[in-house]
Picture 1 (cartoon, rainbow, N blue to C red):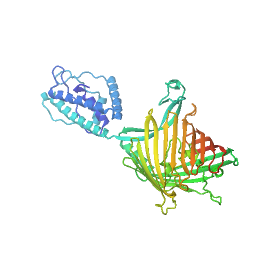
Picture 2: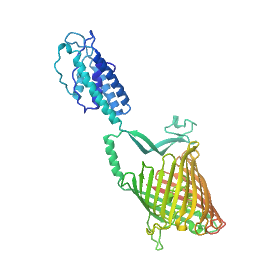
Picture 3: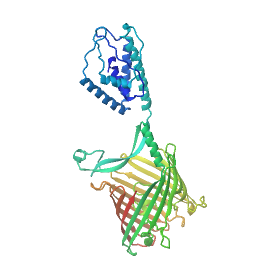
Picture 4: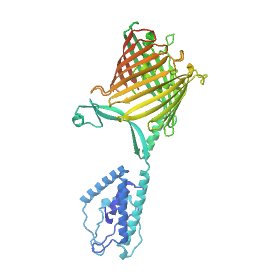
Length: 548
């Protein structure tokens, strides 16, 4: 719109978006085509209108809903104009009016949203220029105030991070696309695609409306309620070959999680756990451990017991860079982490592959953990834990550990985590040790891991002098099973006193849905040091895992 006589349309668009503004209006007076009617003031008004149009154009990206309303209203006006053709009108002097009056439908709409304006009586000679000029000035001022208000509202932007479930489409060669290819085939290799769900972190800017703020307040209130989760694991293991008794073993565990958010960026967690069965380690006594999830809580009277595995309060400070945790804790949740080998319920169940055997953390007990993440790849943490879970003498025999970690993209631009830790065990005469943990993505499907650790070898102060392990995980091994994974690991332990022990494990995880998985596996212990046997123990098993 480049002419002043289109001002009613501009005013209508603005006022239809923000009806709260009370702007007076009046009927447009006729101008004569036979004489110049745009004076210097009106030229300036036209320029100001042009500038307002530029401002409105800049607001389109921030006020999408308003633009949609404008488009709908504009279409309505065009339809009204098409169905109500207007003949040129004449003013009192008989001159043809350049802009005819609007149809009644449009005029009523304008008058409904814009109150009438009372104007003073003007001389007949001033009716051509002075009255439109005054009306233009007032409407332009109103438009300017409206635009400033919209700009102020649109400038309240908030950076938001959300974890969202997204659907990806992957082919057997590992090419991932956010949408289906032509005929559901990969654009790169023309292989057939399959869909899978993934969770990704999104960061975006948004402007909160009142309804969004209310919804956010409701969500925050809901988050303050206690959330209950459950996780159950069942493991069957059969000894296939050994100089010991070849028999089967069953074990199971159940965790009930109670999670609450008493404050902003603060989480409370209580984990109640019950375990039945000791697994095959009761006859082999290997240092590698054939079942890291076992360890029955059943007493001699045959009654199962429930233990408080963890109970702690966690807070984030300094823009969520500093994490503080205090309570009854499990240090392996924070130190010696690994993407491929760190969870006995969903990954390897051999203890030597869940955590480094040289870590030798005490049983869960009172402790403190502080971790600082620079958000630039570098992070470091420090932890203290009492070896006494009774709550008495918690400052005696302290276990202390520190770790430095780095997230890297140096390997062909793929994610990798590199950690080095050092610890001191007050329960064993301040025995010291160190270790490293690495996991590196080699491709979209392959991830490798490696660990190494060493201790001071004083007799009685440590069980494992040194240990190393390495392995590989392959995700989406089959085109029809994009959420499955297969993994293989091998490790060796140097026991204090001179003996050595090796272990290996291969598992395949069928991820049936987001709540249920089945994982058959095969394990082997070479020269189990715990019983001084030179025979190889071969064990086959199957694990089921369900969680909500």
